[in-house]
Length: 177
Image (cartoon, rainbow, N blue to C red; front, side, top):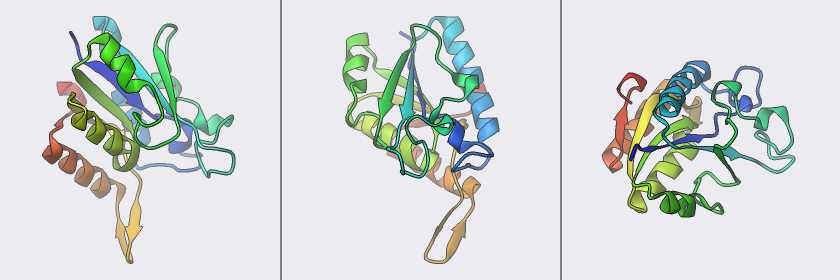
């Protein structure tokens, strides 16, 4: 069985003009679209995860254009879409049950944000016993700051991918996915 592709939160608010733009989101979306095309060509399973925040939540707010999935990775009829309200795609959703019903043991993960929802979901998947491959260049992160230290989105992205690799995920480029 091919790994199940899990596309996490590639939504419009993360792009230029959105409420929470990331660093290099278009390049990540293009890489994710190529992975998605290959999965579809193989007849492999795809699960789309979409985050919805309540009105007033700042970004990815329910019923806004920013909460819509980017057209490059939009679901096709028959593909599963899971709506979540927490960073971890397993919390408050039936993702784990659906994967178990499918007999899935391996996941291929792309998405946004590397430092939040991708991280939380991948760590949970590993804890649940899945073999997880993260397509690093099909993910994106924001610039962050803490304690007066500015951290570039590229550094945030690299640090979280390195940490996920250390936690048991396999991290690859889109070309190797």
